[in-house]
Image 1 (cartoon, each protein chain N blue to C red):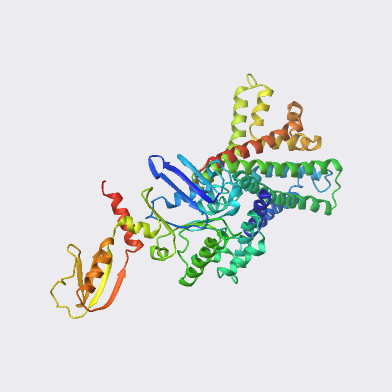
Image 2: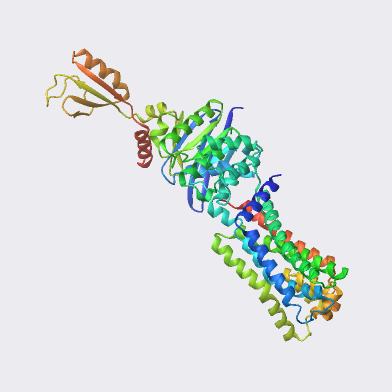
Length: 306
Length: 275
């Protein structure tokens, strides 16, 4: 069995408010999945459901062979969780915190303490958590989530408050773990960060899963135009180039640069036409739709009545 | 195992936050002042100095131990939830009842340490000052310390139940103050008033006993003031001691039930809670 997390038709209602409605997905071993959506879209609710902190109103969840809603927790030995706005006991030091959590997971304390060095808290480990800055607390939160090489990592907004350098280290560690078979589910607002890293993206909107797939698949589904920027020599200031496909919106940027929004299937055709005309292309930029744009597209498409 | 890990962490935190120090100093200070000031009525030649202290210390305990226990415990669940530390703890391979039991053992250890040390100091000081103390009195004193810890356990458990049910910390604190007032002060006054009004017409001794069992502080009071003959003489409870049919084991069982039932209910409420 390689599935680590199974969410089947899960609905969670608080009174009359539905936090999550009919969400299903499976997460596989070694997958790195980005869970994106605005505040209140149900990302944190989904993670809490996977941890058994709340019970689904409807549907079933399985995490590492456990049913968290029934209070089963054996699999949680191999699960790491970093909550949004992590809070830790202020009276304990960083080292004591890390030791406490590693004992609960039955992992060697010495190894857990090494993680403190990795997140750059080696020298602050003897200080009380109460004296830590927000960024330091976030680092300690990361260190505890990584105890014992987890097989499933649930990270809720993991990079908020981290400086760029540590962010880089963080993604390297995550990548390493994923390549060793850890399932990583992370929610984030920093879409540009995730773009090149997440193998799969799940987009949530108002508690409903609106898209799920690799970034390339989502690009295809969204049918968003690719921006093609051409720097062309010998182009009159106002004339529209003859090689422009009909119906493709284009803009002139600072004189000699033309930006064209090309539909996915027009891309190659357009390039053929440009070169066939014998136009002198000095430079070429192809900008595929970013995750930001894909995200915006899926949100808009679910909000307009279908 | 998980229970022990959580308990040790609670003790560690209590030491750090100076809860242990504060509780021990408070109990030791009051016990010592009662020891030396409280011997005034019997004079310095009093042969039963320890028995007098048992009477005054146990009266003090009824006010103080429940208050300290509720102070530590009312925050245990709802407070950790509000601070967000419970969220992380429950993502670990630990059951909720283990968290609750671990906290209970940790808090009880803190309370037991403070009580034994604080009250023990009073006994040591008395012996050091040259009072002669017989074995009966020592046994009664040890029973007083033990039952004080048990009373502490009762109120820690009650505090957890409130904490597991309350929506926020403020509510938990308010309810705990109310419970303290009710069980420590109002209950007895109301009972006295009732008995005075009734003039013994309808309410039999059996009913009074039952009513007393419904308040853990009364159980504690009867246990300490009537179960040892010498003490009950000083406490002026000799008359009551003859009338009450509540045996020592029955009183101890009552205190244990007063611990286990709220603790069980707290565990149930906590396990059903969403956070």
